[in-house]
Amino acid sequence: MSRLLILLVPALLAVTAASGQIRAPALSDAAYCDELIYLYERYIGSSQFGPRKPVPNPDVEARWAMSRCEAGDPAAGIPVLERKLVDGRMSLPKR
Image (cartoon, rainbow, N blue to C red; front, side, top):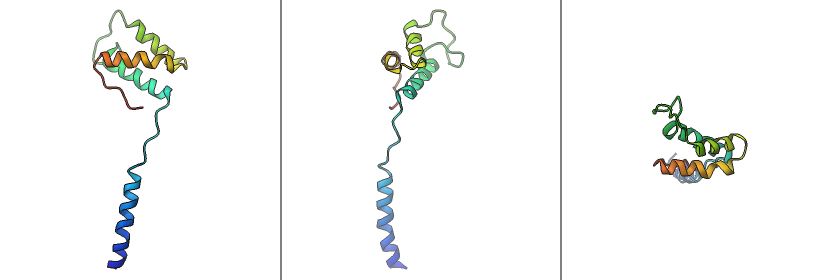
């Protein structure tokens, strides 16, 4: 029994160490853009779900970037939304 245990422990440690190196798949541009929109609306922009009351003059540039993401052009919307979040002192989600 002790010999079996001596053989199994290093094998289990090797498997555990190898499994820790597996990374989660990267977000697609569309999914990343959706996450940026959620963060912007939740913490910076005017949203019925956000902690702030709706702003009478919404940020046109941010709304344009969101519309680009929703239209299937996340490459145009991502830089704008990232800048808006960073300017609002928000951390960007991991890609």
